[in-house]
Amino acid sequence: GIVVPILPGLVIVWLATLVWALEGQTSTSWVVLAIATGVYAGGLVAQYFFPGRRMKAAGVSTTTVVIALIVAVIGFFVIPVVGAPIGFVAAIYLIEQARHRDPARARAATGQAVRAVALNIGIELATGLSIMTTWGVGVWLSRA
Image (tube, rainbow, N blue to C red; front, side, top):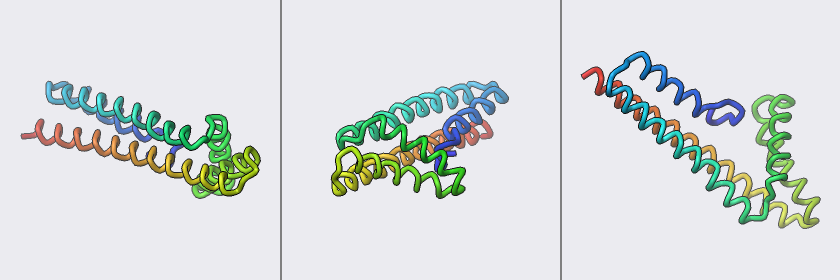
């Protein structure tokens, strides 16, 4: 769910920690859930703050990104799995090319958008791994 942005990867990881805490009903499980919730919230903030700021600095509009995401979802179903990134990149390039009529500027905007998406996935992956590590430590502490 983290690599394929359509699926709610962080939600699934956090919900698994919640189910574990509800099942365990120990002080350790509640502390782990609280830490996981904090990590989850921090990850969400970072996920939307940093990549968006970088794209705005590069001049990529929010409308361009929304259209590219819609094309990516359509591309995912037209060409399974690889259609999403192909559709996203192609849409960013074509929209920026039409907007500025400058291939170099369109390539630069597309490159910035791709780096922003990679940063977004990296933040989400690091957040998910941090939540899982927190849960793993909690399991280890509750079994000891």
